[in-house]
Image 1 (spheres, one colour):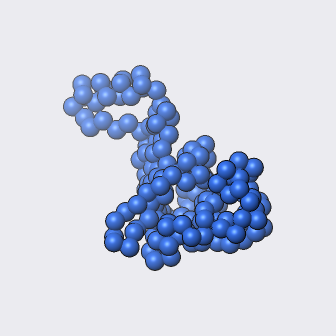
Image 2 (cartoon, rainbow, N blue to C red):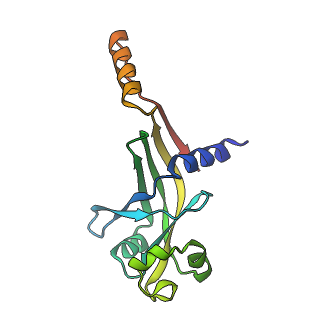
Image 3 (cartoon, rainbow, N blue to C red):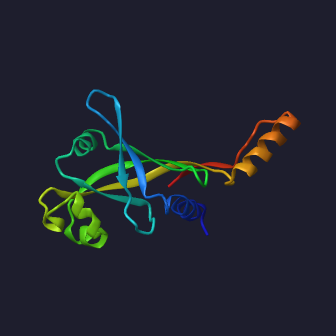
Length: 163
């Protein structure tokens, strides 16, 4: 298997059970803005999908500056992922139907017929992740061992990948 394919599989595994990502965009004044977004439950193929409103602030920000960041965190399993990518607004009824879940009516009361309904597609360009062995005891043993040996504490796997 090619390294890029392995990296994509690893990234998909790291984020697959983390439903909410923090999406960071660049505001017109240069400030960074983050908000929670629900990642759609699809196999990771290099793109991530989110439902959004066409006239939301984030859509305007992405139109001006398409570089975005997505941060995923699962503190219980000590998984942290930072994804850099290119965001774009997509209006595609077939894709929306594929991704739609009844619970989304809470945000889009008219369902798939809501005129403001759109998708935000993030094409992943690079990622960085930290994947540590879970469990407080595992961390404590590793920390004590590092202190005793006079070494730097390395809590787990840390990698940067380009897709």
